[in-house]
Amino acid sequence: MKLIKADSSDSGVHSATDSGIALSGQGTLVEQLVQWAELRMSQQVLRPGMRMPSVRQLALDRGVSRFTVVEAYERLVARGRLQARRGAGFFVREPDAAASPAKRAKASPVRTQSIDMGWLVRNMQSGIPADKAPGFGYLPPDLCGGDLIKGGLRAVAATAGLQLSHAALAQGYAPLREQIARRLAELEVSATPAQILTTSGATQAVDLIARKFLRPGDNVIVGDPAWSAQLSSLAMMGANLISMPYTPQGPDVKALAELAANCQPRMLILNTVLHNPTGTVLTAASAYQIMRVAEAHDMIVVEDDIYADFLPPGVTAARLASLDQLKRVIYLGSFSKMLVPNVRVGYLAATPEIAESLGNQKLLTALATPEINERIVHRALTEGSYRKHCQRVHAALDELREPTFARLESLGLKAYCRPQAGYQGWFDTGVDTIALAALALEAGYLLAPGALFSPQQTPSTFLRMNIATSQNPEVLKWLEATLKKMRRAAESATSSNAPSAIY
Image (cartoon, rainbow, N blue to C red; front, side):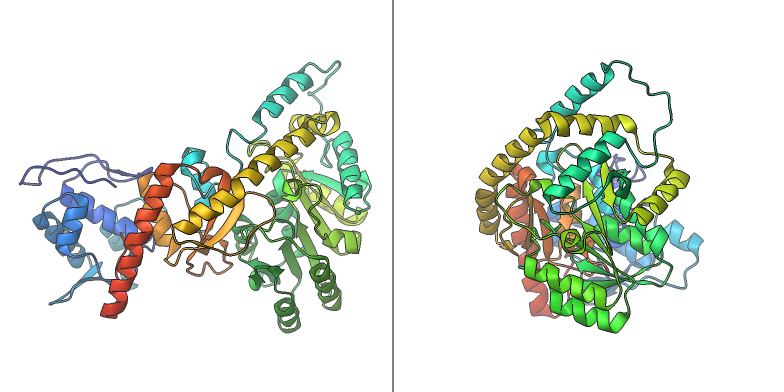
């Protein structure tokens, strides 16, 4: 929210927005400042017990008079949102749990956008340009396969005898499934087309699997960190998410064995190659140990390999499905990450019985996935354009990776590890990245805070950065300045024994 400096009366009416988050649209500067503070509280940037910025500091930063800040703070005190402490300043209060819903609604007129598991996905679709979105989860427009998709659309439309009036098969476009079976054979995974089911990306695959195999209260071991959309889908179904820690070398296999022995897990979900967000790659030794644990505790294993095509030839990686040959492993793949986000073509591979059962479930819940998308991907795979596109992406990312990591480290970010490929990096910022992400969104930038990759949304100092969308000097300059400001505020709070609000 950008407050507009007015004349000395501060009584003019101004329009205010907060990075696409709708406010009341009208109000005095005092009202706008109150809305801003309440929005920050709803986003958990201003947390109970935090000391608010001093009247003088907030007036300078927001370009308003001290009288405006004092009046806004007094209104927040009256609403029960702040507590005034003589000689110490204003502090965020615990929410009044006894307040009625009507009273809370009246006290909080701002339509909020909480930073939760769906926050990143929503904002990736909000129209923020890729070059202003280091938290973006896909390739930027200049690297993704947009031209390949356009060419595929024209070619498919010109196909002689093309019939799109018939219903698509729930199992998916048969020639594409045959091609996927050949690709899996290259990974030493033996599967027939009958064992393959196309999906609307890997997210739908996880949803189908969870609906079939999980019941509320079932324990599911997931990575910590791990991709938030998957975690959200499982949590919505009532699964208990059990955190398996990661190391810079990949999943902590010793911790996995202890968790499996203690919590009787029904399922393990693991992103094995170029793990999101750390970028680690599963080793053969770890893969073997994971399968031993899975067999000992009779776990269903879901192997998420959606970044497989970002691994250049010559870089080796182990696959659980290769060791297990789809006996207890359900293997997931996708073409959306390497192509474009809105062409949702993914797949799963499993035993014939599981593939058929999940196909029936897909038929009942979604009928089928769009065959025209699957035809476009099939054409790209069989005519060589997809392979050439992958080579171009590999070369571009290899050129960006080391300079980008070095630049981010110069800002004080500490890399968790150095990925061998792909476009993701996991960095420790030293500050609360939920607060950092909220500030970024207000400035028009999109970051991916570490709490969104935690099964319990634990506060985190980590940040996922997309090296392909972290090249904008304007964004990097803002990030450097904001990190310095937040670190100074944290040091000041430590010296006063009270957490200080970051705004």
